[in-house]
Length: 326
Image 1 (spheres, rainbow, N blue to C red):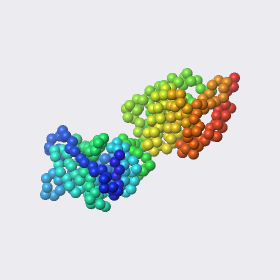
Image 2: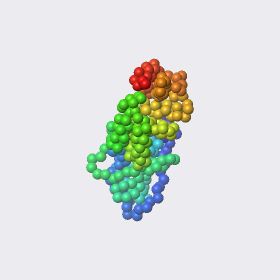
Image 3: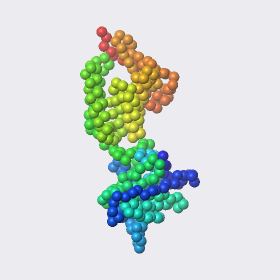
Image 4: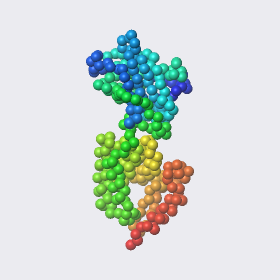
């Protein structure tokens, strides 16, 4: 994880180095001048503006604009806050289809970072931070009034394909899943619903495989679908999907993240730890067993939107009251 800020706190802060990407374009494709943007979802995250340096060949002036503070592992961006800061370009060199340039921190001129922009096609390119495990980011050349976005949520993380627009297909799958459960405890034909659940899981797998889920709501809905699976792997995948939803800022997904872990633990014959799971058998009281009530406190349960143990016991008794008696 690389953390960016206006000032560096340690002299040993990682110095980014940049190596040349082998180019597949002819030398004449070196039109670097203009505005290059890196978008996270539909928001501009980094804006690189380049102009040819007067009286020079292959050198460019300009700036790189980005949020003042953020952290990245090269794939996800988090802790984004502060105003957009302009970092002037102080040095540059070109080689074939790649431009290497150095920016300077306006608040500390000894603080410099090296970048490399490579053109990969007309109006398309990559901006690379060369460090272990990092890949080049896709950038596009754009015109008009461009500005780095300011409406970031510093408590969540973002990915390049991030979007706030939820998948309508995932929404429909989720609504069908919930509708099948509306009759309530003891009133559901599980033979019919079980087959529908399997079909919904398969449809959700296809959306995941085709990268059609983007928003936190998408992943929360997918977590519910796999929570209604029938194998430990279903529940573990549901837990993973719920964590992705939380990472994307969907705070309501914290409950399903807890419930999926409880169900996974029970499925591998281990006690649940939060108390989200209730089980019923004919002519027997509802139960939460096996249940380790000592590991997690009610204070922590509240942080996870999980009811206290006393509230859970009241819920268990309510299940018995609502069940049809024969």
